[in-house]
Image 1 (cartoon, rainbow, N blue to C red):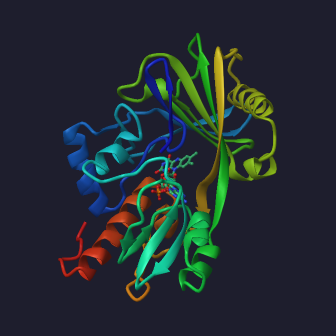
Image 2 (image 1 turned 135 degrees about the horizontal axis):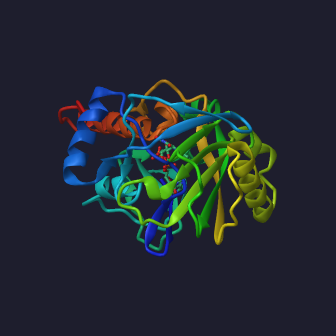
Length: 294
Ligand SMILES: Cc1cc2nc3c(=O)[nH]c(=O)nc-3n(C[C@H](O)[C@H](O)[C@H](O)COP(=O)(O)OP(=O)(O)OC[C@H]3O[C@@H](n4cnc5c(N)ncnc54)[C@H](O)[C@@H]3O)c2cc1C
């Protein structure tokens, strides 16, 4: 749920919105709305099949965004937790019947009975101790990359839509950031490239990526081209799992290791949340407390 700040407003560069299909997740979403953590995004949506072929998307599915930023939700969920930022864990070592983390912080060594890994599959593999039963499971999950582009315009892009799904490469998605609640009125668009196209262009220069994505956006939507006052690109190396597991989480009481993340359930915020609550349930059961009913 990455974000950039542009003149005091939040621009969501990663996840654009989330949906809530599962009743357990919906209950949480309802309370987050009441607390002002998230809001419904009343977006007008369309899909683009070929240059100039744009169809309105009528959907009864509610879409939600964090306010004033997508990452507000993560901030909210981490309230009261002891989180060490800018600390990269590079390994997990067995130490006297417990686990010790190898990391970049100068903190004194600590040991743990149980370690929960909540990273993309590739990092989970590198963190898992050799011989862990989960190495082969995580190795079967491929994480796909996504180039993202923020473009700030002085004028309004003359499209009657707030979000567009593209079925024509190189793009997969475009959103008018200022159509989301609690953002500034500056005309800012976020474009996402298709995963396959990103794989083919991983090493390309970011200026080249920006030019291609912008050119394609105006060509495919068939609206007059505007020159952005600012562009910023970002490569997301682990944007989506292909395929995600159908497990909710991975748990080994014997090893004292659990794994959660969107790639265990589905490549969405809802999947990540349900995966996290599933692993919390296993942990609570282990320490003799009632398992989570979410
Ligand atoms: C471009 C893009 C668009 C998306 N669009 C949507 C969308 O519209 N709707 C939707 O629902 N979802 C969307 N998603 C997916 C959504 O962002 C993810 O499902 C969700 O963020 C996954 O959460 P997570 O906690 O499982 O993993 P992550 O968000 O990947 O969090 C993993 C964390 O682990 C940290 N980490 C990794 N390795 C280490 C290490 N060695 N040591 C310490 N920390 C480490 C990382 O820094 C990161 O903070 C999108 C994702 C991307 C990239």
